[in-house]
Each structure stands twice: as C-alpha cells, then as structure tokens.
Length: 293
View 1 (cartoon, one colour):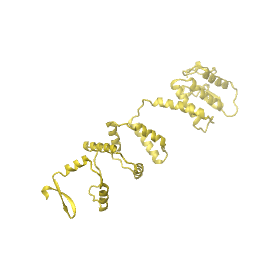
View 2 (cartoon, rainbow, N blue to C red):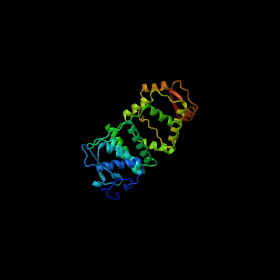
View 3 (cartoon, one colour):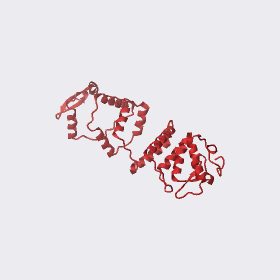
View 4 (cartoon, rainbow, N blue to C red):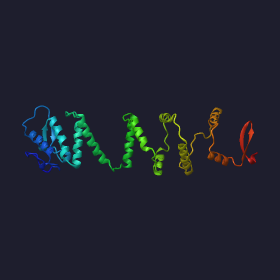
C-alpha cells in the first residue's frame, strides 16, 4: 500500500491497486467508510482488509475494518467488478473461496444457485486461460501420475465416465489416425506391462460377442506383419517347449475345418512346403524333405 489509510476517507483514488471508477467501486467505498464511522458493532463481525492482501494490503489497523457477515460478503462480491487483469482473477477466487470453503472461524454467507453458477463459470474461464499454451515438464507429469495412481489404489479417487461421454469420445476418434511417432510412444508406454486378472476380465467382457469385419482384420494383419518385419514386435505365444493335448489339437482342427484359405495364405503355405512331400506314418500325414524319403 502506498500510504496509510488511517483517518483517510476511502475512495478509488487512494486504493493501492489499479481499479475502475464505477458504481461498484463507489458502493464498496461507501460500505467501508460507513463501517469505519461506526462507534461499535454489535454481535458477530468479521475483519476485512480494505486493500486485499493479495493486492498489496497489510495487517495494519488502518487497513482493517469490522464488517457484518453480509457486508463482508458484499464487499468481496463487489471487488471483482472494479478490478482488472490479474487482480480481478485473484478477487474472483477470493469470492469463490469465501462462498464455498468452510472455515471454523467465520460464518459463511450462503449463495444461491445462480450466484454459484456465475462464479463457477468465471473461475472456469480464468483457469482455462491460465492453462492455454502451458506445458508441464516430464517431472511434473510424473508426480501427477504417481499421486493419481496412489489415490486410485487407496480408493480415494474414482473417475466415472458416462455412457454419453464414451459415445462422444468414440465419435470424435473415428477416422483419426495416429502418427508413427504417437504409435511408437503408445507402444513404449505399454511395453513390458503385465495386465492384472481384473483388467483381462474387463477386456474379455468388453470384446465378448464382437466381430471384426474383413477390412479391420486385413489392417490388423498388415500392421502386425510390418511390426514383425521391422523388429518392433516379437511373437510371444507362451507355448515354447509345450505340447498340445489331443483335445486341444482337435479343437483347433474343428475350428479351421471348412474355412476357405485366402490366396496369400495358400501362397505362403506353398513357399513353406516347396521341395517337400508327405506320406502316411501310423495313419498321420507327415511332411518330409525329398531327400528324407
């Protein structure tokens, strides 16, 4: 504050911050000056900083005035209406805190739904503007991630996504393709992760009864082949060294019976069996190299 307000009539001119000269600033000054001229105040009261501390005020007696709870609330409701820029943001937040955050030392003036809505929208606009173009460092993102994981594990944090929101997200993502860089990042983030049994169950329920059309299958196949060829993906079947039971073999056989083979499948099989022939051994067809016959 540039000078003491002791014994000085409060006006817009002797405020320590830049403010607009309008009806709201005049009403604010009138409430403060009337309260300062009172000889005494009966019943409950609250101390108010004439120049808010966040705007340069202090705890000196000349900057404090005793107000009723209603007067205090009105003063904080008026402050955002004649402050500008970052000062206005601070006053909007102070108003929000006063109306919503409980405090054992103060009685809070209850606001109606319309006032709550107006305040909430103002704060949302302020926070949105603050975050626009702002990027968090990798260290900050890591701390946020760890904190959220801990809260999820403790059951203190739960995110509920409505079905309508899921549909909107799904519609927004349709037709969008990830860049190669994004795909690599997603792959790296999931590499080496082991899914829990609960996660596996949820995935199973999600895809139960769903079928992929031929185009989707073709795209998945081509992507997998490209990943195998580039070494970015390895075949992990978990069957190395294991033998299938007769029942498992029969199930696999029954599954493939009657299925037409694609031209590419037949061509691949032809390449693998080139130079080989088969003969029956103990009633089973066995493929042998020609020199093994």
